[in-house]
Image 1 (cartoon, rainbow, N blue to C red):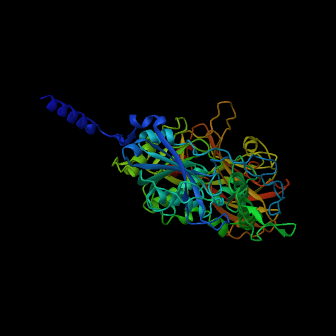
Image 2 (cartoon, rainbow, N blue to C red):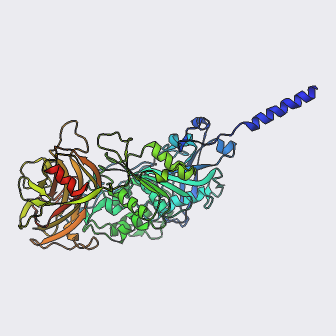
Image 3 (cartoon, helix red, strand yellow):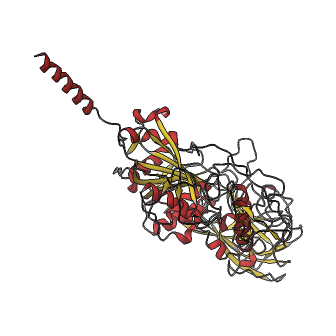
Length: 625
């Protein structure tokens, strides 16, 4: 009897242990929930490795390896649990260069002139193994994901060379995803042969990140790599031409006057300290060095040759160098579901970067949503949106997210994490309203839906000493032309891309052209919001009036016609305001700054601005009559 009771107790104990449910992801309302068993960071497993790629870009004759770090719940080791991956890659993890004097290009010179040489700087790598980054971890690991980070080529402990949009920056994250799916090799050390397997991976990967870290998910997706199911790029740079040029014009990203692609290269190049044989690639006093750093090899090959020959700061023309760094041109293989995020007032990586990719993804039939807020650079979607996106495409939970509203816009007075849903972006009810110019310089002219029948011209004089903000507020100035609508009696909702057609003559062979759409009167008070004054902006080089690939010097006094888009926007202009079109030349925060005095003469009869307004001409006329 005692033996029977003992066996019964043992059996009951074994049964109860086996009956205990193993830790696994939990879902509610279509979202992955925080799991108690995954919460404690003390129980997370963290390790690093190197994934072998298919390329060699640092001159050592060996395939480059990317440094990768993994953070996962202990149950992936103790209970055989397999989970999907949230993956972020970056060139910034090991630190960046200081903003040394001379790092940026000198912008004070005539358009088309050869700029002065700039100063090169070097990054001193920071950070220790095995941690590459802590981003994403506290959000996603407790919710049943494994978080993976990697340093991009030529940064941190990754081999290779940074190319700032080159092919290796797409193939590097592809290799990591291939490893996560069992198709590529991972190694315990940078040079060793002991392999590491991703036995804890389900083979379902999602990528996210902000700015450059948001560009890399798109770069990986354009390879069509199997296993990359969804991406959430936040404020991504989707074309380095659109980042450093604008309609043929040499234009800096906001806040970084004089930056160009080679500056960014120096800024991120934190790797490459190993020595390699010098195959007469670099010479010192005409005597070839026996060994050089990989960094020096990359500098000579990428920065001082490929970039120097391709970036063309003289004309600003589009060319094959820039075409190869435009992800719109590479989207054909893309399959990953896309949730795009951006700020309408991001004047660093401007909102067109997300819109152009979102538009193409829709055309390709890729599941797509776009989230826009009214602030500046950065700003991911609300966690609920991201959670539903990854839950659907990484865990395979049928939460119907693909049938949610395509467009989510944060309205002007709402909190950034409380967007309003719309059927689409641009708003399907927006229709183009064309406004024509009536004279008024040097004070203010008018914007009207009625086209002038009289040929009239007005002239402005370039002077970069006056900022765009100063010019928009001036009652009387010869340095800009300003045309305003009647005072709005009702709110006007703008949604989409405004487009301008200008007919202009210059008294010099080249000139900057800057266009701002503004809301007046200008609010310069302490409580002014980012949406109060600037609606949208655009820049162009009249020398590219026929083609972005071929600029042609202007004949002084001859009129040239050019049409180009301003940055996308979705904004409600409140009643009591006026919509103003400001045309000027040098924009002190964005363009080259030539000697003041260039004259631009605008043909008002031909020049017009087309604005996408919800309700179209009927709504605009109702608001202005």
